[in-house]
Image (cartoon, rainbow, N blue to C red; front, side):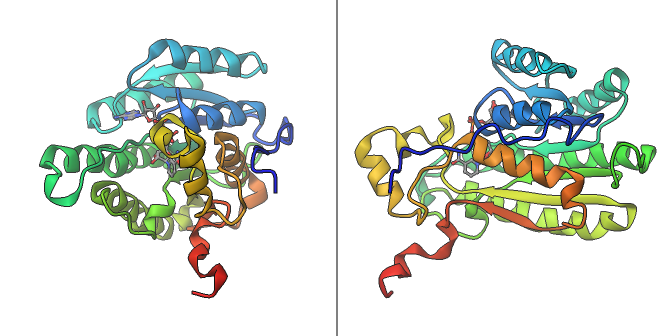
Length: 279
Ligand code: NAD
């Protein structure tokens, strides 16, 4: 098997999300960047949120605008309520509404359990879990205000939570991160249950190991990559486009009946690969 093969390219239908307005948090790097670009390719107008690195965010917005859709970079820390409220209000003013929220922003602050400081614990929970709560809450208020516009989409709005295989795989040395993603899973399901009667679809994507700056040490060297591939039955490390394509599909009306689901995009990492040879 050739493990240098990457994500499939050139497969996004250009008008799939035509007329929809998408907000992607943490969109100037890694998965968020690829997702924002893929949503733009699918015809959506896209707000590229960032907390640091304005230039990179503006480059992403410029690339998206080159597809003939609208895009802009908005600065906001997703863990700060006032900033999330201001960002959503600005998007409604400047873009008219929000149809798709991709709550992607996230980070790691790794430490063994007794070495972990309260600040490390709190930061990860604040950004990865509370940040998604705040963005989802503000987007939902806008979905509710606008309601279903049938020419645009069958649903009043879509929320896609960026989770992780670590919503179900325990991860020693990362108790803050695994707890935040476990929380994302239950938050997503609860919101899906609560909001489905209003035709608001809430789902999650759970990436496996994807080549981005967040986990560079896990794939940067050939030795690290070999170790990592032992955990991936499909025998290639994932790329940001693998996740971006899944988000585009979930956000589209092709998936209109998918509600409260986690789509694992992990090359089989959650299939207990250690048992492949007997267990
Ligand atoms: P990344 O570090 O490249 O991107 C994370 C983005 O979040 C960056 O743009 C960063 O600036 C932004 N961010 C961090 N704190 C923020 C805040 N307070 N407000 C706004 N933005 C903030 O990493 P990535 O791999 O692209 O991660 C994206 C998401 O995917 C995260 O939620 C991560 O947990 C998840 N994920 C990644 C992997 C992987 O293997 N890379 C696997 C599973 C889940």
